[in-house]
Length: 290
Image (cartoon, rainbow, N blue to C red; front, side):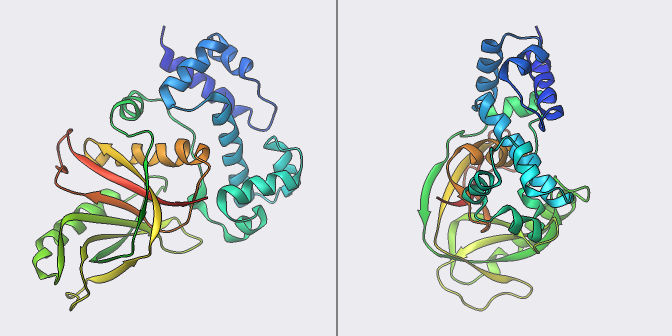
């Protein structure tokens, strides 16, 4: 029995019925698996309950409608399974720290939450190469110096990561010796949105400094404010980091009870990082708050 294919059929059924009432039994029936077995398999594959996944997908559908349609918020709320606009607004504000109306005016595409694609690479990755529960820790203010570029991520049709980030790191590492007061041991990738109404991101390849000296030509200083982070372990080649980020945003974050602060995400490159090794270890952290 090809469980992977059947689970994907169940996911596709959910996607086709996000605007209607969806029972777990209907999803399992569409997939051709008993409800109990479907729920057990789904949880084993994703570390998430089927009910939670359906709720998060309806929430994601509501996000998209807020941004790309003029549908009334009350209609979006009811379509997402909420009893009223008020209950939808409360849940939305708790998750995203803004109201649905504020989000619609902001036009922030970065909140889009994509459905899971159950391909074998993704499943292998989340079962073997990610710490499914992060380390939650407080990080004091850090001062970094690095090189900056702008790029489009994998969720954009303009995706140009391969053209932008490896050359940035190559150039930056060649100039490492120019940085004054360097703190040895860890390199940082700093990822954040550039403007409110674009899917372009900015990225810094950086090292920490103990104090700011003369910043080398074309480099910039970056001050990371003190913050609480959820830090995940990523094992394997860095080219697969998107699988880890997808899991963090589309699975863990929505069921964590925490929310992203909209600060910068961080990549950590230490002694265990080896660019082309499947045994490489890096860490990816997002800033969170209650």
